[in-house]
Length: 380
Image (cartoon, rainbow, N blue to C red; front, side, top):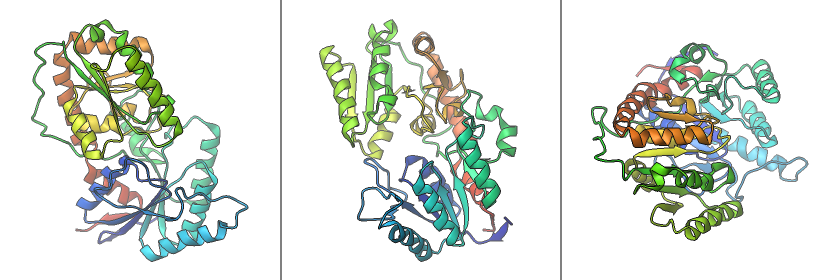
């Protein structure tokens, strides 16, 4: 694909839903003067539409899903193709997933005869054979650029993997993240360690490990014997969420922890950011997380992070500098204890994470890279 030196193109995102991790890219495109639209298959419960109001492919259905055989198959396919033709984008960024709907959407995008980029959240060093085969077939048959914000699932810091970063196929395009406060600002040292405010964000799903995190905190003497608190901000939008929420709530009530452990449900995006700003340390203890964004939002406020290693964005964090990457309860307790025993480390993490976000996750720089991969370099 050649590079077009011209005015900013019109960009269309086709994604399952409007996830928060899109916002940094969109903010960067806005700064570059790029016009964009977002088409989604469904709306989520707690989405941030402050930068863009997405449009559903099928406004009549809660979730756009193509099945074969289906009487709606051709109707749905034509609906997407017409949407693309109506928007008249010069570049499409399409999120590809492992399902039939993605395949049919991809076919329609090909028929639209518009330049496009395939966006995945699979690691560049993907180990699973099926995904590697699918990636190979797509790249060889379609010969279109592919991008991912996930470099690797190991704990090597992204900045220590710059060679892979530069030469990778697919291209590595990190999530953009605006810095939330001045780089010169450093959190004051805690006067004591009797009240550290911990925060976690995630839907009430079993893999988010909310209950397990509470139990580990209460088993930690530094936490349990102090006045420290832990707040969970979660989403409830289906039966599984209700079930997990009830388990967590019942545990808190049975153990009289309501003054130490707080649950907030379905908060709007501005409230979530306010909670991040108020906390001291952010916890992300979920399992098999494809590419979480709340840990990056916390880093953009300079917050230290403790995160589990099996997370697509865990290695955006520099272990021992901006917080800790852990893979066991033993490592979690060691990390927790370090914050209690070395309160000055919170200030050190603050400076390090703000510096990293400013240098590595700048939305405008990342958006320019995204356009370059799509074949556009701007002459503004």
